[in-house]
Image (cartoon, rainbow, N blue to C red; front, side, top):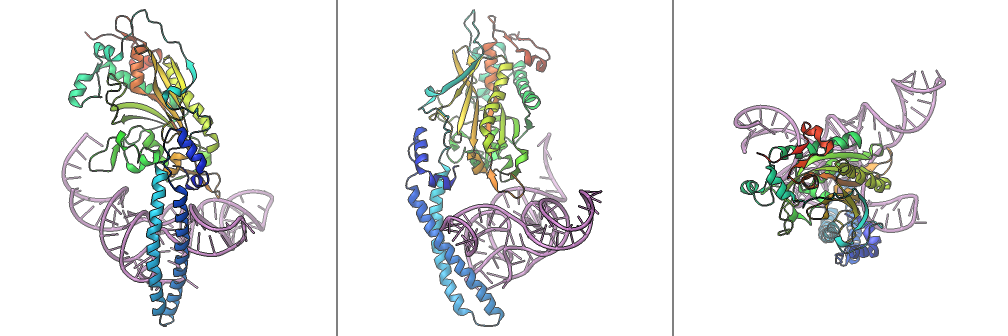
Length: 426
RNA sequence: GGAGGGAUGGGUGAGUGGUUGAAACCGGCGGUCUUGAAAACCGUUAGCCCCGAAAGGGGCUCGGGGGUUCGAAUCCCUCUCCCUCCGCCA
């Protein structure tokens, strides 16, 4: 959420940034409503001041055993007037809050201006896509042929966009989770946390998923519980409402969770394979930082995520999302895209973002520079490190052999009892 | 699922309609004393918002929301969370 005072003082800028995102002007008569709001507030508060003073007089008169009925009658009227004005004030505040809640974050000046994914800017590439001496297969052919991936039975027990992993397939998924968690906790200084996979709506508001994006989520019927679309939601809200010490920043957390997405509106898009599922696993990196450090922290967080791909020796590129492709809460985002030989393209496998104080304001995440200092909003960042399902499929496709077997990347072998290759089941 | 109890400032905890934004204690900060530290003593110690150039003035907040009242931390309703007991359960 943007700061009310900031929006008031920078309406032009906010309007321009909205436009750069390719969004229509949702501000409406922001200034007018705010002006009315402040006029009402002024009047209500002065009436309340009057009532407070009179209340003391009434108390005094009563204690003296004198008659206070005249003052009481007078205050009865004042009270009614206050009530009237309060209702109006509440209406104005509500209007402003509704607008503010639905306003996206402002893109950072370094974010390229553009309409959509086509105008994202490639920042760097790593690794050389392998030259195949045969036609590389897609993972949705390789996996089932190896007997480690099964969409039919998943459809039977759940439905479309679910998968069942069998045997080594399941182990590979688990090995990837362990490998990523070990890397980030041992080499990159993150603290592992295991959060709830179900959250309340207040947490989803904190990260910016609500109120606008309820359709992307699974809600548990008859409750205020939602399945998490990413560990970002529970982890970012861990310190909601708290005031942290500046010395405790940055806090670097990493979490393995299942993630659940309704994928409403994506019908017909990437329906085959593991790319777009209702349920997948992910290791998420989350940082809470000082405002002045957040952009450096974004660079290092992105590098931490890239390290996973480098160690797995999967070719990838880094792109800076343009204004038109940027998520609602993000001020700046780098996507990591892994090479997929079957489709001859780079496919998103991680998204690393700086949210600046946008989520901090919504979730009330603050810090203090000194004991007697003022509280300030901290900055939040997160990135996938990595999406496990997509890493799994990238390994299958990039490490496949002509006979349909798949070589296990070196770094994963210790997690699989030294297994070097997945071969078709007998 | 059933029955009961609770939520007050950084912490413990008092306060059951009127100078209570809130006692006391602990903690924190500043000081006195000391070579230094401890102890002791003294002082100080919530947040948010509005008006204002500032000085200053005002408002709101005792888990959230609503109500009663001239006036609510205190009374009523409701929601959330926590605790105890019973049942069930990994």
